Length: 406
Image (cartoon, rainbow, N blue to C red):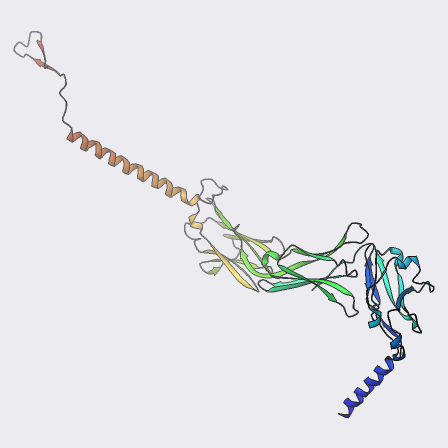
C-alpha cells in the first residue's frame, strides 16, 4: 500500500513539473503525395502561468530548420497552411495543401500570441517527405496459408496523410465482403484500412490476391495508385479429375488417373483389393502436372475379359483420400491394335443385337399376318384353259380340245 501511494505521489509531482514546461507532441515522419495535402497532428503544453494568455489572438507558425527566419508571411508556406486545430485547447494540428517536392523538410511549431505568450518548440520537429508516387499498401498477414473451409481475414492498410482525400482501397479479385475504416496510429496520423473476409477454397490456391490504394490529388493532376500482392496457399484433400479414363485395344488396356490436392497427393492402383506393382503385365508410370497435380498411367498387357473389373485408382495426402473404380469390361475391344474406344464403345454390340432381334420378330409377325389373310379370302374365278387327251387312237394324231369356261 505504501508503495502504491509513493507511485501516485511521484506521478502527481511529475505532472506538476510537466505543466511548468513547454512541450509539443508531433509525429516524427509523414510521407505525402505530390499535389496532395498533409495534415500534421499536433498538441502542446505550456506552463500554468501562461494559461490565461492562451486566447484567440494566438497564431501557429511553422518553420523549417534550414531557414530559421521562416515566418507566417513567407509565401512558400502561407499559401499552403491551413489551421485545423484549436489553439485555445492546445491543439496545433495544421494542414498543408498542394504539396510540392521542394516542401520536403523538417518543420517545427512556433506559438505567437498578442501578449506575453510566445514560444518556439524548436527541440521537436516533424519530417515531411513529399514523394512523386504513393507508398505501397501493407497486407496483413503478408502470406496466406490456410486450409480449405476455414474463414480468412485479410487486412490492407494505406497511409492517409490528406484527411480530405483519403485513399480508396480495392481488392482483386473480389473474393468476399470488405469494409473500410479510417483508423488512427499511435502518433495520431491516420491510415485507411480495408478488411476482406472469405472462406478458403481449393479454387483460391495459387491465385494472386491484390490490394490497390488509389490517391486523388488537389492540384487536378491524374490520380496515383500503388498495390501489394500475395499468393494464396490453400491446403485441400485430393480430388480425382473427370479426365481420368481408360482405353482398350486387342493387346492392352491403358488407364490414366489424374488427381489434384495440396499437399501433392500420392497415387497407387488396386486390383481385387490388392496393390498393383510394376511388372511384366502391369506397367505403371507417374508424373507431376504442377505443384498440386499428379497423373498415373497403368498399362495392362493381354487383358482377359472381366479380370480388370475391380481396378481402382487411389489418391491420398495428409488431409484425406479419394478413389475411383474403372469399369474396364464396359469398353469395346477394337479390331486393330492401337485404336482407342470412344466413351460409348461398350454400347455398340448391344445396339446391333437389339436391332437384329427386332427385325426377326417383325418378319415373323408379318408372315403370320399374310398366312391368316390368305385363309380368310375366297379364291376368285378366273379364265382357265383345260387341256384333255383322246386315247382312243394312239396312232393318230392327238385331238386337242380346248374348252373354255365362261
